[in-house]
Amino acid sequence: MGNLSYLTGTNSPGSQSIDESLYGLENTSVLFCNAWSRGDQSRAARVSADAMEHLDHIVNEILRARDTNMAGGTYSATPLESQLNIVRGRMVSPVTSAQQQAMVAAGPGQGQLPGQPASITLEKLLNKIKHRHHQSANFRIDNSRHVFVINVDKPNKTPDSIAEFDVLEFCDHCRNVAQYL
Image (cartoon, rainbow, N blue to C red):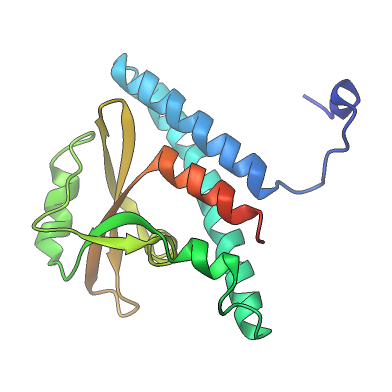
């Protein structure tokens, strides 16, 4: 499509910004829910792949900024730390391999947490997203809200947890975080 920045009077940066990824994730989530509700699994799969690229970019940018600030001694008691310590998801841990497999085997659109979930902060959720099984996830649509459910392993590849988050709430919160990056 080419560079159309002349239409808006703004310069287009070379790489995708976190704001663009947040916008992209929001849009793909809406398109995904729309395609899913119409029974168009092919379109849902295509936009889901785009959504994962946006999600990974957002997670990496925020965690990179956190790590840079920590390394420089400029993280503690900052607005960035405060934002990352706000509850933004839910998780069950520990879990078994059978529980992780059951979450996926429930079928597309039927992703649920087993047992009693605990609330988790955005920082913990970002780490769970970063270390998720890329081929072992599910979702559900609750009252028109897209909830993403992920399996996470420990570094030694044993089951760690199953986590979930509302995609649009995640985007709203990360937009607040982005101002401190």
